[in-house]
Length: 374
Picture 1 (cartoon, rainbow, N blue to C red):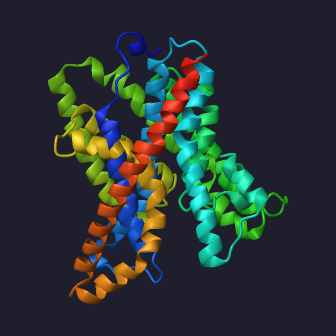
Picture 2: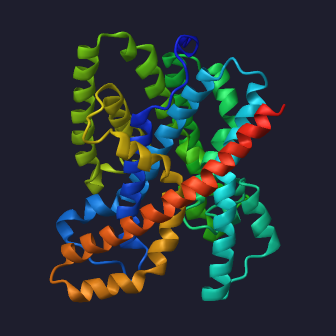
């Protein structure tokens, strides 16, 4: 059983925050190409790396989330009413900003597309449980499907944390989650419509965005947590850094291989392979936090990554005419793309830092006040 929770105080881990920043950066890099219709033109030689960012970035988020939840629960294990406090913190971490984006999207969809989301759809989304409703599984806030997935993890995580207390337990959970994911995929593809659970139009969405499809990726984060604290943190610093560099190099080689289409769906499928691959990166940079990647700036931006994630699709969609103008002004596709990315990141950073300061931190503070008042 892990016992570091009683020997070390709770402090934020900069490498987790910094990696959140790189995860959202990769998502933005991908969605900047895909959201505009027709897609922004990019050179063929780099298209595989750029377009893969949406799936890969979210998988990295999920690995980091599971690691962070384990860390937080262990560090706060001495709290009274730990379970209640966990759910209060999780709700006030994600709900305030999400509800604001729901309002913005409801207005945008009505004004721009003439689509008025009915009360039932709004209610399902507001419950944060829309991953359980096939017709609403993607959410009407763009990219919010990941919020639906993470909410289910939050609901069951205390149970996972109670019984998965070692590396062996985490490995067992990983194997169980793979078998569950396979079984779920088989049911969805071959029996989802026949049993009346799904409409034909929902099959692809439920298969791609359902929680059970991503459970193995969360299990990867739990494995990394136990490897990091129960094994590698106990060896000397020089050895830790050596292992860290090895994991980073193996990650690079692994990810280059995964960028080839023929490799993405062998064995356990792309999501699980991404989970394994990004586990190497998290473990590597945790053991060997390269200063060029893990520093105060990247960690600071990473703390605003939730705002960056939720705001980026709306921002990109809103300034598509700017991208078209840029592409008409510059001589090459890559220069047009890089210029568009620069403008997007500047605007997104400003919006997200303001959102983090006044919405996210306010919500988290409210949650802490509710906890302290009991």
